[in-house]
Image 1 (cartoon, rainbow, N blue to C red):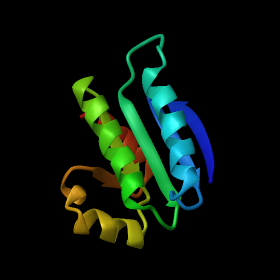
Image 2 (cartoon, rainbow, N blue to C red):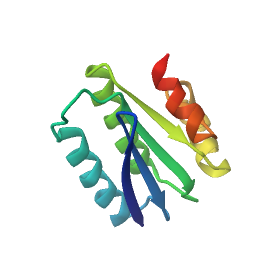
Image 3 (cartoon, rainbow, N blue to C red):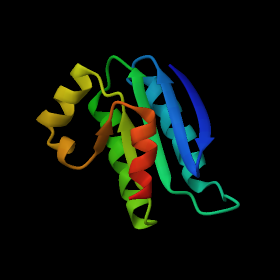
Image 4 (cartoon, one colour):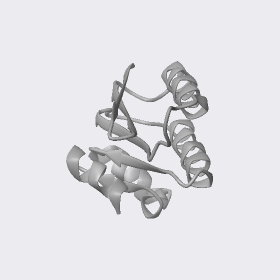
Length: 116
């Protein structure tokens, strides 16, 4: 799995490539936790996780999303999923997490959602 982190309008965007299973999920969790714990010069609005190039995620990977969502919500921030593929969308529906996570298929729309 490859992970890229970038920033736009006080939002941290994670671009992921590859399956979020096995050791890859621990690598992602480490990078995500480091970002959540990092002091920023000004308040952050939250995190976007771009899943466009992620064909598969397992339950532990979903747990990482839930933990990040909880942490961000406590800080009055939010977590948004971008470009959720069919298999991941099915997993979200099956686990009823689709009711919790905001999902977008356009990055600009995802960014705009933080302004509401």
